[in-house]
Image (cartoon, rainbow, N blue to C red; front, side, top):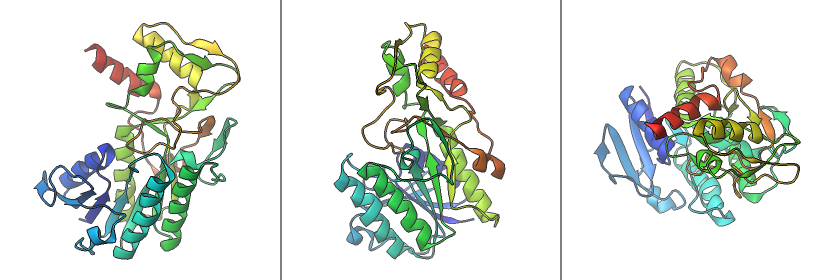
Amino acid sequence: MAKILIVGCGAIGSALAEVLARQGHQVTGLKRNPPRPSGEEGGIHHVAADISSSSDLANLDTDFTQVFFIVSPDARNEASYRAVYETGLNNLLDKLPKAHWLMVSSTSVYGQTQGEWVDEESIAEPDNIASRLIRQAEQRLTAFNPNNIVVRFSGIYGLGREYLLRQALQAPDIQQSPPYYTNRIHQQDCIGVLVFLLEQHLAARVLDQYYLASDDDTAPIWEVMNWLAERLHCPPPTAKDGGSVEIGREPMPPTVKAVGTDAGMNKRCSNSRLKALGYQFHYPSYKDGYMELIGMREG
């Protein structure tokens, strides 16, 4: 069993910690404000620390064999992104140089916005500073150790991440033509992908540095919102041709803490590398995941 550090115990990190602890791993969760600072809960050891402060990390164990880097900036501004993706990452790499790392990133690192297909080999040159800082953190981590892994999640949705459901109820204006593509992954599949990749690593399987994690059903936002409106028994959206699309779009790149939508959008994300490795999605389509969420609302 591995000695694991999870940096950033938000919704995804906390759920991941629970799964790994049940599997018998020795799990420590690091967060600025954990539920029980410097204590044990559910087999998980909690540590309170700000990763941008090297003094906060002074007493952190140095013998972790696996680190999950699942961070969220305090705010959506350049200083906050630098605090975690530059200063925080560098502090932890200095502290834990021998650990194997798995970083959660975002499809916002792709600058493509014309409906192109993207995969792990596509150019990743984002045009906003927050996404560029995430991309630089990816490069720093993989250059530090070529065996480290980066997973790029698309728009995360699930229980507590129901932004599109709320928007669908408001009959919004949506771009119909040309198609404006969006991509999603259910938060349970986020956890599933991370556990799966750890299992492959512990089994000494040769892995790639980058994996794009998004479900099988990239789709135009017009199609998604009409489908949701029909299932919610509310008025459909109004067609809006051309121009920008605001539904499901965030001014800064998404993190696992933020609304589960892929900023920049209008690209189509291929999950072929992840599926070729053997991962099977619990929710292969947004229809599978949202039908469950709608059923919870109606129940």
